[in-house]
Length: 502
Ligand code: N01
Figure (spheres, rainbow, N blue to C red):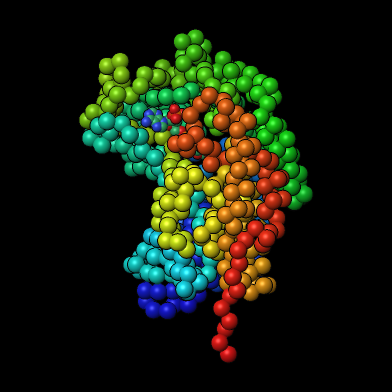
């Protein structure tokens, strides 16, 4: 890294975001001797979504042996599905152990980036403790997360609410909820973890449900002392656990997204979970989903339905008409008074705000390029008109069934291979061709058409305004890793690096 002036830095790789993705890129580039990088992070620490989501009950719904880096197994997980503080501590430890943190700048936001064709470099503006700075870099690696920008509900009057109001991903821990009247809007993955915890402490809880989700039992368990010792001293055992979890998900779930019959056992399990947790037939009917299982993300919980059935909890299914100074009014005219409002209404996913601030060779931003087509990249990672640009957790890389860390590692392998190819052949730029990108996305969308995500009769955050699923990967994760295992330069336009004056 070169500090050109107080306000300008030159670095080979600028990495945006210090979550699982940005950290993985930094560690793996360093392993390759690519040490000239800068990671910027708007938050105060590594961790990304696991730093931000501190709501009561936050935990992963993918088992930790799989939801962790393959190169950093952790024998210390306390549970099969780890709680948020453990995952955050794990990410912090991996970062410390890798010795990369000296090139991380926290409290530093990415403002904008533009490709400068004359200079053959990215020119980015960043803003942090040191004020506004310009960073010139050969590559721009964006690992800003697909679920990092909270989406607030567009409900009349919500801005005039006089009590405490916050989003699930921006939990206000200074608010004491004991004995209060609280409302939660939303019944997605975040809400179903929050609701049981709130129900235990609040005076009264109203849960506003727009669409009933499928919730399977959470087969969680605590690792015993002996098992933990075995995991620590027999490293092969962790690999065995990881493989068993991985292949269990990999063989069953991608199949059932195309063949509804295969989903029937899961549906039976979900309906059984309702019957087990709720005895009131009216409430059971309200929480019974009306779309095909798998269309929306399948949730897991043993405590959600019992919490809804508790004396101090009401499930409200009437449409919210407006929010007043101290209440929520539903379309049937009922007014329910509250002190605290929790909005667990998800994230901006198909229109990521950062895409408005990254401009390619032509001057058009990613958002401009994707306005008509929806999000689309080559191999979910690189984009025509954006030379030397790599998007981690990019279009159609999401998963409904397995670990995003696996996908991130596959993308980082692709980034490493691209950088190594550039070095070996002295390329100044690599940029995927439009033809390769279009063919890739046509194939993805063709495969998508027959999946439950598109045909299952639900609205979900996987679909954009045109009904295109630009979020999920429609094939197996094995296929994804294989397709990104090497850098296929034939799919790229390349230019030579400028020769160094002697
Ligand atoms: O967000 P969501 P999330 N009025 O978008 C409702 C990951 N994650 O934060 O279904 C009323 O899923 C909306 O209703 P509907 C995981 O990938 C993982 O819960 O659109 N309601 C829905 O019920 C997950 O999928 C973990 O009809 C409104 C809810 O709000 C993703 O993050 C934990 C509304 C939003 O659900 C997002 O989950 C948490 C409105 N105006 C999250 N607008 C784990 O690993 C929205 N809703 C455990």
